[in-house]
Length: 381
Image 1 (tube, rainbow, N blue to C red):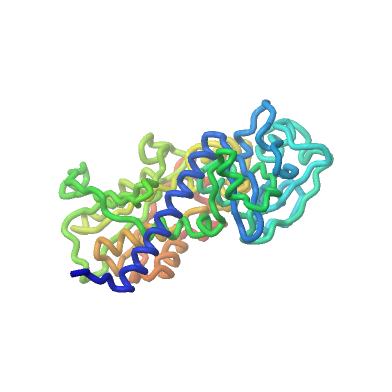
Image 2 (spheres, helix red, strand yellow):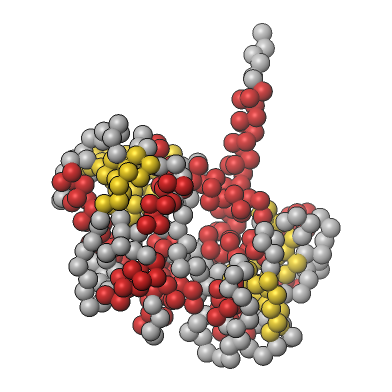
């Protein structure tokens, strides 16, 4: 006797396979880019060879000179192009061409605010990239790889770009997969481990680890006490901060916020702190350190991010919503000074019944940082 599989189940299985392929495909592309290799990005009727601009060194770029590869361009964000006086900051990506060619010496001053050399170098022309095109997708890849958001880019003239990529040993990825990656990765989060971990300020604590099937970022829920999910749960969304949380850096207030939140939740009796893997407002630790260098030269925390080509805040809160849902939490009392977090959770279907103030004294090293957050980001202190 043959067992019939319902069409609904078949379609769900097919959707799951498509999602997993997209997750694994983008993760592979990110790994290739981080190690300095080139990948092929496939769009609607267009394709290009892409490499992270910051990995271009003094050696020639023979791969970009192969048959079927067009002239090289440099792709930067609208933020970075505007700082260089080349474009409007309202566009997401800008295509830069050079009258000769792109070399490391010409690329470095364009992408690195600390580099020596004329900015922009002579002979550069700029044109905005259309939203959703291959050049735009290349910038998104660089951000997801936590690299500087700039790419060396060359269009493929081959009619079958996917076959060209296979023939030349290059990993290929579609713009559709890139566009859906962060959403699919958040939706695919699942609990992979949990354990009781007594803390100095909250002995009745367990840590729950979340990870998607692609093996990407791991987010943690620090659950204090026994949650009563029939009522709003005292909750803190905390983005990881290696320097503040672990080393006790005085440049920010992250360490105080982390420990203060655990103390407040413990005093309440129960609650949860979501420890989200999005260092440096989503730009990564290396780029955060680059931004710190720029702050030492006089830029505030938001301007420093924008000097590097990032938006002032690159964080996403879809993972937080998924984690709360899997913990059975639909209503929260949110420990935060950032109204944007309240709005983000509300947009994702979490009912924020109250914003609970979360304020700590400043010091001589972070006073300007906190003032910038209040004046320019609307934080409530």
